[in-house]
Image (cartoon, rainbow, N blue to C red; front, side):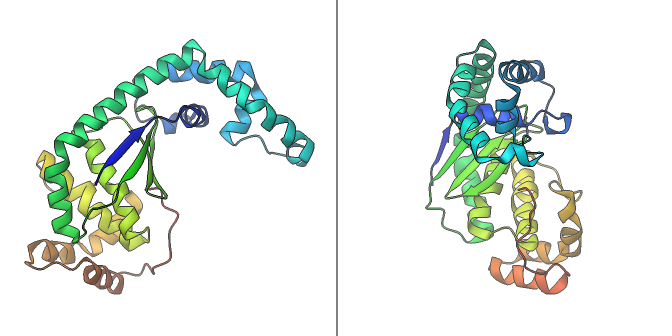
Length: 254
């Protein structure tokens, strides 16, 4: 399995503009540089900024065909002007440095972590994935389909990127039901994290809305870890029978 880490410059700009609220920052590091690009983009065109940030369409006039045709024609020039700006040059440099660090961390950890995740899941990891990297001080992390991941986050603890890239990879194989997501958190956010960094769990790491399922199924998970033969599908069925979650796909961010 190979990961191809890339920067799509249009996506990097759009993600940076969209995530302007304080709760979308994963770190205060380089926050002033992000805000500088956001301010420059707003000054260049409030309408284009709102369009790319998804906050424009508040009334019927905004979605008229004539208006949409006009604004979509202006977007390529707007993006090009931002890419040529000194504010963006700073963000790109920081993101590129982050990408290089992610590649190095992933490469250093891959052999050990693949062995562990394979032993816990029984999955043969033969697929390649594309990972679009965004600025590390803004929160990002999703498997978006088609063997593609978007990723960016401050390193909250050692090997953070490794753990959460595996988390997103497992969404490709295991899906995103509540139980599947809880299993992914057991495997990556907790077992893999502890294997790399030492420590114990609980307390759990991951999405708090999944902690109830994890608490209810912790004994099943611990028995699974101790068993010589592991069947993840059977464990999933046992957890589904134990907890009242259903199997409907959820809207949880991964």
